Length: 380
View 1 (cartoon, rainbow, N blue to C red):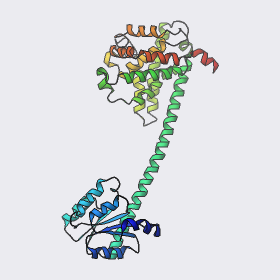
View 2: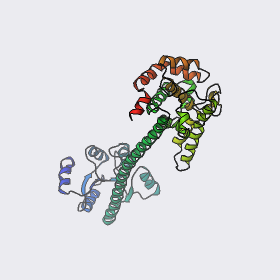
View 3: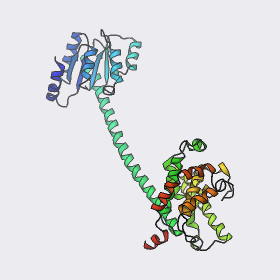
View 4: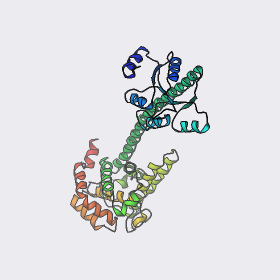
């Protein structure tokens, strides 16, 4: 039988039938196996492992019946090659053997065979064992296909949920910003400033250990909520155009505590923790100062979470270079000068150095995304 010439023709004549490769160096076994299987399957016989491997380069059967005891290349050696290749490793193999000892059967199954049939085989038993294997393989493929479809559905659903979450967070954060006379550009700009700082800090010795466990996107997303507590501050204080009194400034400071309470309340209604934990860190620490003079807890130096140190610098730079109800925007150069003067006081010294090196990127963002908050709000 010339396999390469007849396999395509025989398959086309028996559409829907499974294809079985029968490999045995005994011609009697090949003839018996062919007679038994041919009424039910497309059967192709080979008398060596080498011929089987050659056929597998071009054709993939539904099942291989493989003799163990063959000259030159035995069944164990043949199946090892089959299972080592991505194109053939998933083809089920049933070993045929005259050996009836436990060690041989264990070795065969450990090599990747899915079943073990003793010779001389009973035709009805052979058909039954083959049928069972093919049913199992069909069910496995169905499960794999189902899992793939389910994964696609989960990915699509997850993407939708993430998009909804991000839209909700962005809208919520922008509503807070609108209340103090700014627009969502503050959220967008501080996001970009944080992104620049995080990327610039990659490999920086003083931040390397602290950043090793960071989820970059999670931190950037949660940064949108750093001022969410302002929603609880009275409008006449939040939008005051004159200098705040000490009492009014004390109330402004409370937005940090209010923000923490908002996050804690949300936590009680969801199993989500990572995002909310990051948001709380940023809320709680972005007004702390390196020298310990910040609020609400007066943390000092590396007591301040590194995310909070980054947020503090990004937030202050944006406040300096933006119009606010109580002031006009400073130039980029003025903002850089003020931040450098506060090196080791308000800001982490190492972080200020990184900022200075990346300051041109800050300037580009500030000039590109600063549209004058009051005017935009009035147009809306």
